[in-house]
Image (tube, rainbow, N blue to C red):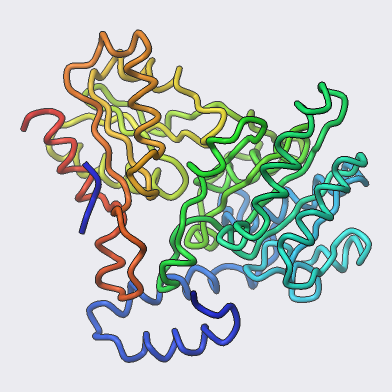
Length: 380
């Protein structure tokens, strides 16, 4: 079951800060999460940390640098990506390194610069089109869906469109209903698009590099809260040739009793729930899907054959969402024969996201919701 529990682009920040300062102490830390995530860990360069620790922000920055050095056709455009180093500092240092012909500040017109980028891709370049938030991509949805996604098919395969649309997606904290939407299921339903959503630093770097090299249009959905989060990475992640395959899920934690399937920030929720379930003697396997489309249902089915129980976790709305698609594909596959209980979903609430911090906190999955749903699945 789901978990139930138009602001102006400029000038809203000061008002939000004032409102947060007036909040009760009990809810103020949650409301400040967005600020903490946006400010943390960008004072040092992408290689300044110890080799085995990397923030998602710096992993994305490294991927930009390495791919722009590798292929002169790659360029970045979007609002504030150049002189301001990006709204979230993902493009920090790129203007100084590559110049204003390859790192381009655009006017506030998503339809315009998304169309420009799509045209450049059709002409053989490899643009990275940054949206300050994917909520603004709604202004450019015609360019993404009708131009970028469909041209290869409509041209009989003769015209490729290698483009990456990237930026923060889904809820952050305190940004209201219009800036908290998860576009994964929206764009994941479109033939011709690949839709990627990384969780950790290794995902962010390896998948972005793969997206830039891919001959097809890719929607690369990041998460604002994750930008400043550090993850331990293996030495090979720092290598310039580190690339992850798009459409291949990763088992983050092995288990035997229940399969937890998450994507983007929800993977962290699953990992937290798995830790708590282990204290109860319940062994949870955690799958990081990494992409909405292609959807790696084979990895999910292989896991459920072992555990015989599946709980999906994502922050999008329940209707026509990721959990629904996974459940349907399991029902239509051999995986159905291995289930000992129905597939259960943990999702965002079926409402516009509240602005009030206490209500917002009840609108998205947390570990407790996952644990309770696992108990239902196991009939405990």
